[in-house]
Image 1 (cartoon, rainbow, N blue to C red):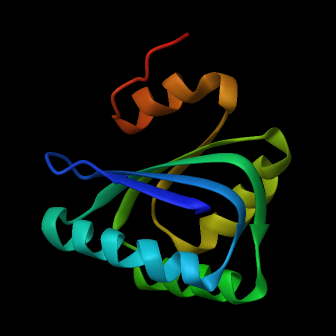
Image 2: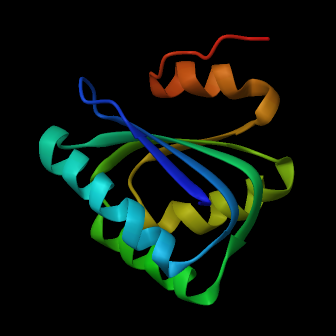
Length: 125
């Protein structure tokens, strides 16, 4: 599955790991988890990690826009980790749809992204 969601019950942090090309079915899988976390914790922080990410199919792009509009004020921080080719596009695309503080990090800087958003750093190899 191109989307893996890790919720942290003891905090308002959600990790979303993306790969491949997202579909509307992917949104049907993970949006209820995000909604429940917002219901439980109020404002949330998101760490989005993209590996071999290829964007959205048309239906998924629409689902993403609906998600962003619905949760305009619910996300306080968004750390995006991925390839540099996505940096400019993601920052431009996300900014009008959220009040969140947004920062983009290269894969090599994932621990810095985790630190910035308040997630536990992963062990380095």
